[in-house]
Length: 607
Image (cartoon, rainbow, N blue to C red; front, side, top):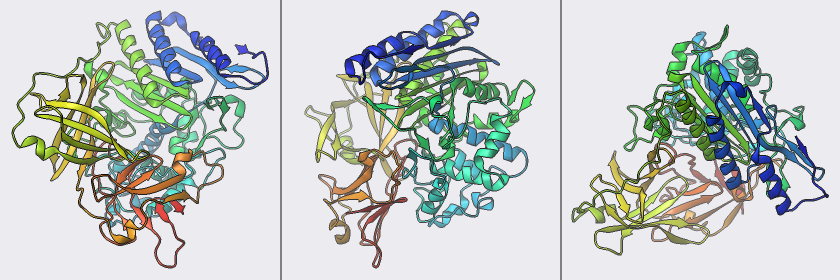
């Protein structure tokens, strides 16, 4: 399908009308005879709702059932120019982003099966170039990198997304890690980040004696017949890819320079990978992995590690974000999932091994959360069709139960400041007796804003307001630290997670660091082709209102750092498992004889 606009240039009304027309029907549908209309109808409604709410320009879906792809469908347009709109199709390529980590995990497990490595070997035994300032880095194993338990700071976002390929990115990451500390001891807990998989990318190359891209092509993509999956380079045909838009602005091609997060593919091609996973490592006569390796991928690696409020969305497997997907768990199924976001693409993969089923959803201008929402609706509807599930699960009921009388000394004990990797919270007395008031800090406004009012303790130990019974907060003490947890309802389940750790408001700020407060520092070493948004190109230091604590504010979020001593480094403070303690870096200021500036990871900022 090709639609032409009637005039050069287009405005929002024309674009909105075109979006509506393109999303009302699929650009491509295959093998309709083998599936009833229920799953496809569920997906169509879910996709259209998400496209309208996000402004996504193209979305594509593929369902795997056994060794068949009973249904694939693509919506929207892959490109829009002054001349007209080009409809997306099953051949349109989308950026897979962090879901590419599945391929990295498969490559590492192949090397383990062939005796080239063992998962519990130290990384340095196979990659001598891997170094860090913390001596404990020698204890980091291959398994810890795969399961997000290594303690690496998070994700080096400098030059991660560019409009031209940057092959030096893996070396940049290794060089930056050599100057950094660990955010927690190896294996202590599991928290998300991309750097561990970039290190694995280098490890695969070092062990195999080939480049990472060539190894993956030869050992995974070619054997599976994934002919439309590739790592983009300058020869990559531009017309094959879905393009991202910011409003009416057509964005440049996006290159994700960690190959472990940089695949371009189609859902139908990625469905071949899913088929291999749900069929015990085989596709027809092609062997990719042993069944035991796939079972290891799907084993919850977080058991026994520090996590006082386990989050089902962060039950990391090997390559998977979770092997205990909450919505499928609510329906009594164990499912594995991974989702990922780049500036232009959002993708989710959801696999149900016991039923040999899976689904992939990807889109341009889509969010990973929207892709995940579509994926779970499609898979649940297919389970109903197959009569493996009696009916679609109902929305999780709000949790607010009977109020409990708060012990006299409880509320004063939880009042105070809490922080995660991208937010800060303040707990104080509510306006009503025995209630709690929560606020969140807005750095741009230099003020606290109300998050939840008059939360009352319930019999299950959570604080919930009558006005918003689907959201609750809880305070936990573990390993001599105090934490703030949140729980919320989703379409089909409930989720809980730690979101912040209590911080001492009176820790103090050394004079050398205090002198830097209030200045704006500009990023000085990003490539011209970087697609980093403007918000990521500066940082600011400020104090958290009501506390003598240095706050590091940057494009991805903000968090407190330890600046109580007048040295060149303001260290990491937070130990939060899961996503609340994701990307964290210490902050370094220039020493004598160096250019005046601040360094965070590999990024250097000047006044």
